[in-house]
Image (cartoon, rainbow over all chains, first blue to last red; front, side, top):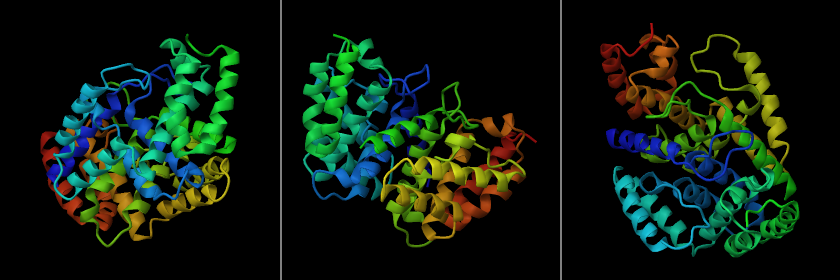
Length: 192
Length: 192
């Protein structure tokens, strides 16, 4: 029991990992713990629109654990250029340390979920990636492009980076977002 | 798709619902969105210790939605005395409004999960309640009783209020907590 308690208290640190977007109506930045909750809810809500048959429970479990490596590495914006291999290696070490606080079978179970998301190959992982990529876009669309403007992100870069993974996991969502992103461009909500 | 987007943006407000305990090492109060994520992780980690056979996926889904009514009502500490009937009625109206933003079947599915948790009768709901009640206790035990001291909560009141639901859903967890709460009393971490 003490191992589980040590693990769950280690997770406290994810509440302190700041992302680049602000929750609507708040001055602070979003943290990765509340983001993980919200994308689990987004995936559950979007399940009927998945690109192929999925086990939504595994998607939810993947989304709950997918950012835990950031406890050691911090959040990196999806638009960062370069450094991804080093970052991946650091995240792998992080999740081995953190899930290693747990007894088996929980430790191996969480690590397998994290790896499935990271590899992005299964239908569940593709759908999970679509939800993860879409959420900051939805917030920016409701926020006049706050994190796009603050970080100098262009319309073209958003479309290039998030279009393919969202299309692959949840085509109906990408169809919706494509139109909204075009409107956002007309509003001048991009940063470059 | 627009209905799902409206729903997920409504959920932003849960990131602004303040609870009574502070995340470890942070000055601010915890919000109900990050709490929902953490108790889903706690339940997944504790699953082998459930009092009876459970579908852990339903437990996780229940925990992700159980606090959403607080968007309209705010958080009430578990040690509040009185006013529970009015509060329950307000939360019911809230979840009908919020889940009502969604199309079917998602709307009815989330409402059923919320009600199952609220009724607290199924094995899954009992286990979910155990995780929900235990989490602030674990934080207080790591925080020198911060929210117990700030709110004048006695050892006896904690044991009386959280002992039975945790024992009912996860007896091994209660056995662990009983000893830790006794140590906390010896440290003077209670407020009355």
